Image (cartoon, rainbow, N blue to C red; front, side, top):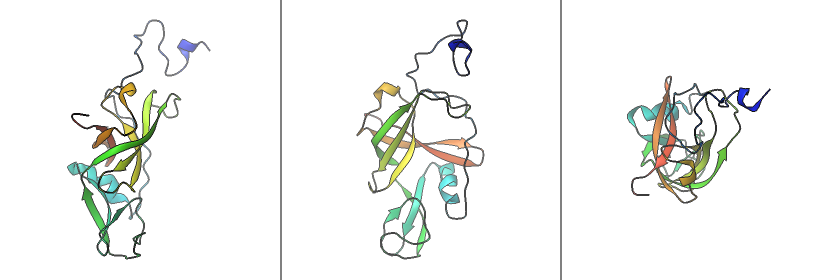
Length: 160
C-alpha cells in the first residue's frame, strides 16, 4: 500500500494541509461510559460550566468523582462549578491515527485546574496552532457537544 493510499493520508490529487492546525472539524463520536457518580461531569457543559464534585464539609473539590471526599472522608458531596480556567501541565502531539474521525496530528494535554491545581484533567487543546501549545500556557474550558454529553476541551485564554 502506498503512503498516499493509506487511510488518513492525502493523495496526490487532494490538497495537503500543513498538519499544524487545531482548527474545528466535524465531531466524531467519542466513547463515553458514565455511571450515576460521574454523569453530572459529562452533562455539565450544557450550560458552559465545568463541574467537579465538591465537599460540603471541607470545601475541597476533587476529580475523578468518588463516593467519599478524598481529603476528609465526608459523603456530603455535590457537583460544584469551577472557573474553567487551567494551565497546561504537560502535553504531547499525537501523530498516530488511533480512532476514526480523530485525524492526527492533535494535542493531548494534562491541565491543572486553577481553582485547585491538584485537580488534573486529561484533555485536548483546541483553537490554536499545535506549535503554539506550551507548558504553562493559560487555557480555558470549551465544550464539544457529543450526543447527549459535553466533552471538556481547552483553548488558549485571551491574551495568552
